[in-house]
Image 1 (cartoon, rainbow over the protein chains, first blue to last red):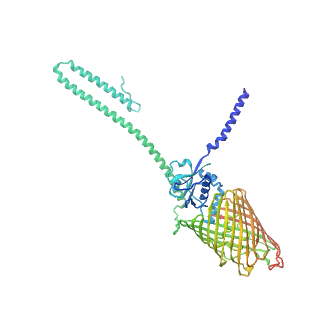
Image 2 (tube, each protein chain N blue to C red):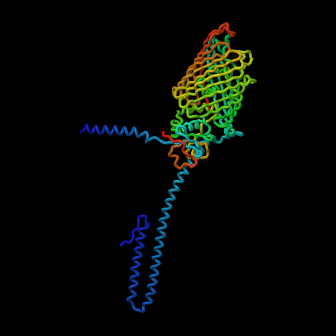
Image 3 (cartoon, rainbow over the protein chains, first blue to last red):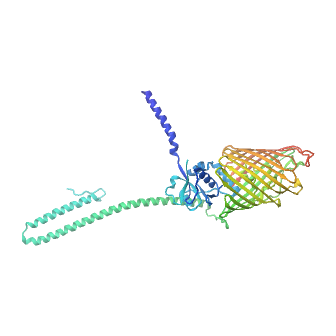
Length: 156
Length: 455
């Protein structure tokens, strides 16, 4: 009897562990979105859009499709959206990004995108600038102005 | 007997009021009934009098009923208005909360601005849409240990100011103004390879390193006019000490602003652009201009580079030509040359590997050849180690020069880089049968500590 109880507890513990390890990363993952002006006509596969977003953010590409001057905006380095963007879209470390900007500043005078702290102000700026782009948590898109749209969604 | 009850808050609520009104109506009915029955059994003489009294009472009762009905309506209305008010209050609270959040955002922005500007006067550009200013300081101590002597000096102090102005849509300008106090290590012995010292060029120089205006038609087509870095290879384009593992650069780019293989800087016109594709980015540069040391002759050239997406590889092909003045080789006469070369960059993860080669075909003097390869390993976010093998045959007939450089870069923060570099340089012997011979073989060790501070 004791042996059976032990087996049941052991099996249940294993199952619980398995379920936790399978579910937890999904459960705690957050969704983010690269937001652009509603007039932005960029299209393509997810990977094509990711590459274009990366080039635009890093100011290697200065215009969106349709020759609209790009106006990328950044978040504070401690912001979860910035960190997720760095990891999943730029696929770089903070140091690699810093090195990129150091060389861009000294070779061409290109400065990093302006940092905007408030999501509300970020969305309004993107709505005002045709080439605007920024990254937000998907939850923050509720109540966003109609002048912006999500171009790319990604999970951290 | 208690007819009505009152709630603890002292108010009558709708069910109580309805109950109250029902009781009132029933009471009135009983009262009326009794009043009506009474006159039927009374004497005729009193009939008229009683009828009048009854009518008066009835009228009073009716008035009372109406009064009660009115009061009930008023109380009902009051309750429904209260419910509406509660709904409005919720909306108002939400709105106030939202406005408070907006106000907080605005205050954060204002505080940030206040922190940056305070009561200071703001700099305004005359006409530019925007101006960005930065720069760097670079200092170095170098100790050179030769076969017949040694010398050490804080030999480099550079302050460079960088400015970028947006003149309007599609138009921009970039300027790098340097203020340099430095002396280059040279050899004062007859053979120029054994007894090191430092050449002091005077009070210092302040060259305008870069000054160009750029018109952007699109990412694929830009036109740049002015003084620019000659777009060949990798290190010459990287150029600035803050971006370099070894600020002394490979041998073919020395001296600063010289034309050992090609002119490091060019004054003229540069057409450049890039095209983005699914598999990578194609970048091109074409230029036409003058080297400051040989202003009467036009130089031309270009570079085509392809960055292969996702691999870390960039491969470049270079072609150039023109005319140069080389006092050592051709006695001051101009030599026409044709330049060709290639470069390969691998930059991914912990590895940063740069390699370049260039060769020239000279119509006067010897042809030139140079190549280097510089693998580097990013130990972590702060430390990078590198090695460089560097070969140069500069066409002067003084033998090949080979350098082995090994160094360590440390970045305590991204805008500060501290370096320690050891360089072993070997001069090949030159046979007595050659025009500049005989020259003996010589080895030199050089140690350099340097720091670059960007802002």
